[in-house]
Length: 432
Image 1 (cartoon, rainbow, N blue to C red):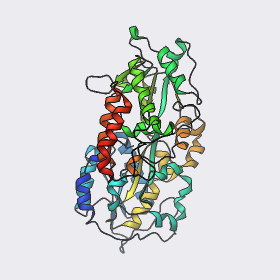
Image 2: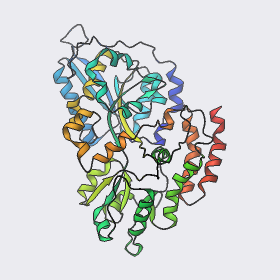
Image 3: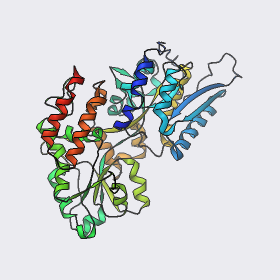
Image 4: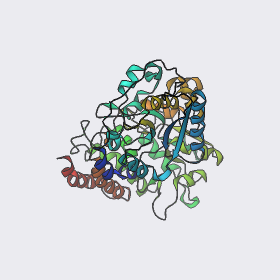
């Protein structure tokens, strides 16, 4: 799974914008509507004995890459005469993808999340979905589809995701006689628990605050307090990024470190929040599903719960998502569509053990929405109805540099209101 982060948004941006205008303007070929839900199709080559190679690019490595290779092999078995070439770009994903688009030789299908940067090089999927009911688009959680749209068009289909929840150490809660958190807890409940669970002479802390948090992740706290970093139409940050509600949401974390209920982690020469939680020295930590298995292996007796709420306001969530898209310059678009469908089919999703399932039917079959550890992720998904800032404004990367600087200073104890006002003032030029 690709965890959305600001540093990836910058990768290849300038080069891609320069080459995107030269990309092919080929129109969607769609499908003939005869394909089955298994992704079985006939090779597009007129000579059925000739092998048709389909290229698929991924950023994953190790076990996750192995799963994708297995999915590709299954597709090959269902489609004689087709060879899926899995290209593992790893940390060089953006650079290699930009170069491939610029040379008009991109992979046919690829992992994707940054639609503002890459949309000009991707095939819109609306007509494919419209013509091919076998994709069962209504079986995807609608909040995930929202993250696959840009400028009113659908450019990808969800493959995996995670929302963020609070992981808590049951043993530490019980030892301190602090009630375990529930889905209706508030930030006051959270702060009280963090204070009671902090035992400094044991180097035990109630919570850990990232010294350089990703502003993408922080959006869910701002949304939950009734604000956002940018207006819904993506044109205004004044009164949003520097609103009282935004400052209040961010100030919570700074205050936790000031009163020693939380420890700063993740920065230079600072400890890892994950390591502290696995060592039993951290009572609560907000994270995604990617850490769940490592906590199990560390034999931590833990639970998960949705984020605390602000009084009288509904909780909101933000999604880390991975999607699959088709290159506009692909020479095998019909076959690429069949592979894309198979990759997000129920059978393939069940193979993807490192991701949370994106299809409602699979979740209900596996009863994940009723599992105590997994249910909070899906409850948060249902609350993830807001659109992230990077999907609302093409200049968000520039704006976010100023916001990130402000946020990092806030986490170090500086005044949130003053810093956010400065970030808004310094970013206004990007909105003209």
